[in-house]
Length: 293
Ligand code: NAP
Image 1 (cartoon, rainbow, N blue to C red):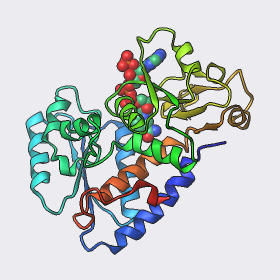
Image 2 (image 1 turned 45 degrees about the horizontal axis):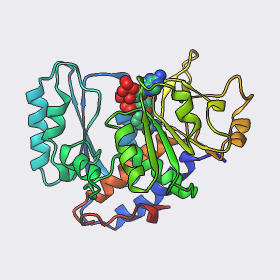
Image 3 (image 1 turned 135 degrees about the horizontal axis):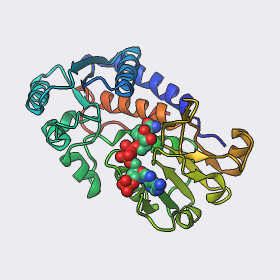
Image 4 (image 1 turned 60 degrees about the vertical axis):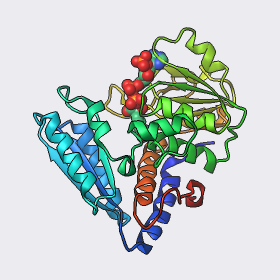
């Protein structure tokens, strides 16, 4: 079965729109974009467009590539102090001359809708509820929950150990009582580890997983995004030469997410859910993810 993130995200966004319409203090997302990386520009544009479609206010602050770290941090401090702004997001990657850790640490944890700050990441790590959940892992979990993929007691193998995807995904799956293995570029016998998984969550950004490396009727969630030689968007799953088309692929797995149309749209919906939760009207921790689908 296909984990249809496009359809589910639409459903979630419609519900968020209804909730936003009831609020007197609308959530307001500020996005800081430094430099002119074309992929980042597209991501930021999509976030702004989606926010506007569902009644969330958004402001994009575009700064030139040469902007100093101090200027970025001062801008964040201004946004922290601004009561109109309820959510702050700094689009990564930042230019090389800016220390991203210093920038992240400047964000008010109560406005940190990406769950990047040490306070929110630390809470997640010790099993406390962070002010906001990390967006992509939260999107993956909503997808798994919607399709009722069993998690408790299952062996989940995560490919990738980044702060954005791999590590928080592992924390959230542990919270849900999965047995978690994290793999990365130095992992030995990767195939063996993948074969042992009931759920594979792949976030390498490279086409490194052949379908038949994964156990028959396991679940495969493809977080990776890259472009093939024809410039087409693709994930980490390589189904050639094992299968002829994605329908055959979907029959091999219990559940599989496509790229595009899987985790990507869920990440945006998840960010919007966090932004909704940032509204002063919502109160802390008042959002139940599963009430949105
Ligand atoms: P990242 O920081 O580059 O991390 C990639 C991870 O994959 C690293 O931990 C790396 O290991 C590991 N890796 C790379 N090659 C490998 C290999 N051959 N075998 C095993 N592990 C390998 O990237 P990221 O930010 O986590 O993003 C990962 C991918 O997900 C990217 O394609 C990104 O575009 C995509 N993404 C998608 C969404 C979405 O909404 N769909 C959201 C976020 C990210 P090392 O740590 O050893 O280098």
